Amino acid sequence: MAMQIHGNYDHSGTGYAERVKEKQADQRAEKAKEAEKAAEEKNAGKLSEPRDEYISSEKSGQKPTGLYRVGQDEKGNRKVFFDDPKAGRADGKDGRLGKGADGKGPKVSGDSQGEPEEKCVANTDKVDREIKKLKEKKQQLEQQIQAASGDEKKIRELEKKLAQVENELSQKDNDTYRRQNTSVIGV
Image (cartoon, rainbow, N blue to C red; front, side, top):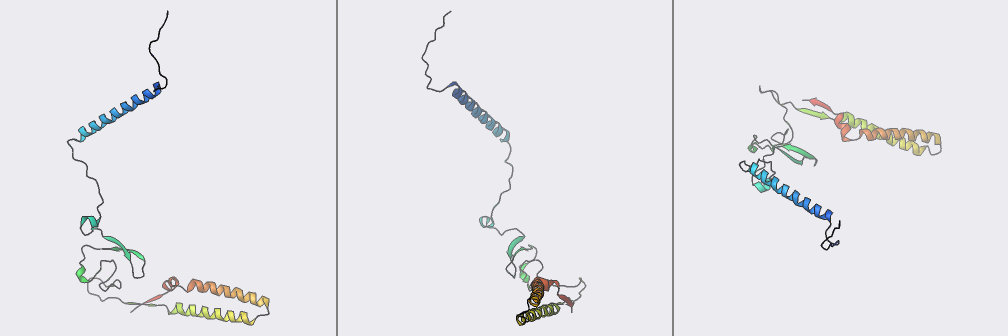
């Protein structure tokens, strides 16, 4: 039996593997089109689902409805403020929580039966005296170190005491320590 092959074969063109890949890509594209048509038919009678969308207050032209805003307090620190939409601004309040009409601080008042406001006074005299004593002790130790210029043992002992006093002074000579140790007196 003899077999004869007719035709010229050009091996430089596309190969079998490339033709299969092209055919598969065409089939995938057809499936994607069919899926799109099916999704359109499914959603044809329905309204699109509502979605949340951010619209800035500048673009909307309306006053923002947010109740909180970031600002700076009296000391320049960042703080979150509450703007109460129910509180009118005609009474002089700026919308911040905990502020009275004068803007200086909360008013401490009694219950609704008309009791007078309670006033308090903060006293830092005890802390100030303690810090002043430590500073005086530091000065005395520095003078004693200068006076004892020849005795190394005594100088080391005085420097050790001076270091303790400076450490205690650094812990106490600050606003945090003053606030924690302030005595409050009701007037």
